Length: 595
Image (cartoon, rainbow, N blue to C red; front, side, top):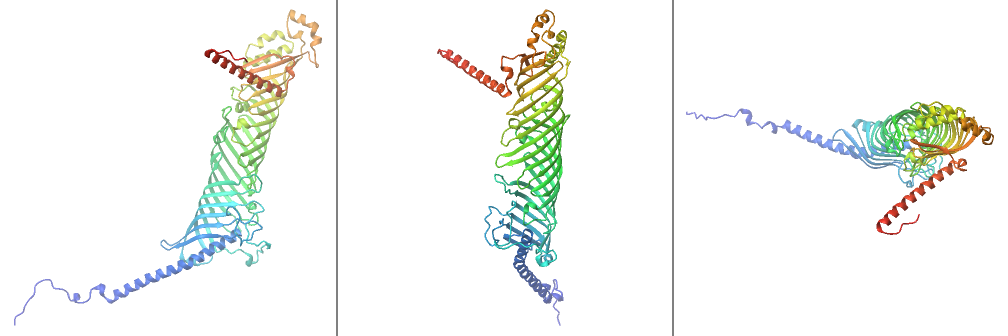
């Protein structure tokens, strides 16, 4: 018997059986996997379709309980791609008034609360549990409008009355179906509407807002970062807000601490410097008590551009519904001077702030205030200043130095003029008025101050010009009574009045002049003085002129002196125009123009 042998690779016996992916157990596993996926998809679709309305209802119930108002929500979607992701759009809480039914459409121009988009993540277990607890919710494009007193959101009909809730009755408690640990908000705007006519709503642009512990009956904590519009600077605040008062949102309590950094005062016309401030505040929205301090190492007015360090501490009451601020008081320290201010800062619709302060300066240095407010350097004089004045800065897009108004009285002791020429003339006048004419030559030319004088007066400042009334200027041997005007730029200095001396006319000169004047001493004596003469002081700080006043002009008021200066200035302008016209006519061969 012949045996035929086939050569080549022989297959094992197992190849005769089905391959492993064709075996029954693999097919069973595969179909189970497919069935599981199908069940998962169906279950997910069922959860999404049923969870979205459930979660939507919980969002609306929670916010309705929080704000006691209707809630509108345009879209809410759930995704299971990365856990349970929830995203919503178009969230609004209408702004109803007290006589409007919640079933009626809102007639307010804007909702009380609106959110463009919000999103959060949770788990399936938490999603199906009630109340649903969420860790962090991110919001974008949120706007909150706090209505003024008398206009509040309500779910009541026009004929219904709100009954006080019984804390022990669970039926009266608001239903909280969604608990959120914290909110992270971006691009947030806060508007506080005012019930006062002519008031724009206060607007705050908040770049970042972090809220925690949100609940219907407890305050939430917050951290906020925003940019103050004017003066431009960064504000960081943290504290507590709430619980929300549905009947009157402006009575909702709040507190916190703030830091105001790098506030550029140059963004306010007429001011300069970089301000920083810290403080604490507490109260309710329409009455916030603020205690703080400010530091401005380089505060200045543009009219002088002389930076000085300024530090203040203040206690203020802020009406958050109108923006009006009541300063009670502000205590300030500038260079070597201390002063106190009390008053108010009122917002005027479309114009800015109207500032009215009562300023008390009990013991300060005159040169500190002249350095701040007058361009000339060094200041006109040094001395110890006491002053009470009413300061008013009206609203308007005008430099502060051009619109500031002052009215009050001052007293300056130990006066020394920084202009040596001026001071020498004062020294000479004092020596002559005291009956020591032989000393006049020396004290009037040594450039050293021999006497200290004292002055007091009533004054007013407006449009950059100070008017001085009833000036009493006392030097050893003489009393000067004057009225005048003085510009804060140092270019106008005009005073007129009388000088009364202790010495008689004959005692004020030497030699034969003294003998010559003795017969007329009795005629020159007046008002109990040895001599009374009309005088005028005019010029600028660098060029001061003393002399006798014209007949009758010594009795002019400061208002008349200011009018004379204005007329003289106008006459000078007219003369200048006439000269220019004549020069032009001569060049063209025409007859000169008559003045």
